[in-house]
Image (cartoon, rainbow, N blue to C red; front, side, top):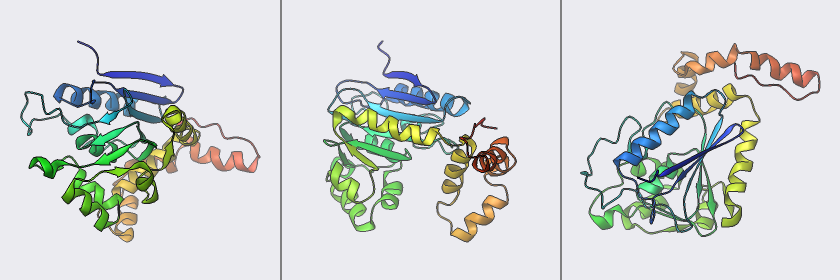
Length: 258
């Protein structure tokens, strides 16, 4: 059987290509394989950022493989659908490089990433209502947090598609690039992130996630109370001393991730 995931390392950056022709649809085996990849990424001290993209030119992912034999309520594993939509303790950043259509679960997978870089031809949609189902892998929860409420509800209730430029105007997409330079653009963004102190990057993501559904005051209190343990690890780390020292000495910092 052909491996649906192509994994490569580029310095501190992990690149994951979902390649299941024709639509990069995701079945249970692929979902669990994606979780295994991102679990290993989380645990690898040498990796700081991941990029997820689709194989081919037409689809990032069409989401759930409707031709699969499993029931829709199948257990996808500890990371939820596509291995990422319920991977709550992943505190390293993931960039979705959306090379084409991100539909249904494919869009939910992109929404589960921290940043989105989109090809000019990319389109996003949650067409579940047209099939008599609901975008239950994070779509109905995440989309209203990433778009203005009326726009998100229009997409959820009509299934209409949103192009890359419109998504960029609304702030859903961080960068729009020609398809030929999509991965180059994603890697440039990843390099910007990977250049900084890894514990500080992970803490930023962990605390931002801690704030979901909470007020600023509640989030601040939760952070100080240790609900994001990495925060205190960051404060007492060698890197927290190295940053100010390097600044004072007018040199580039040497991050150790500890």
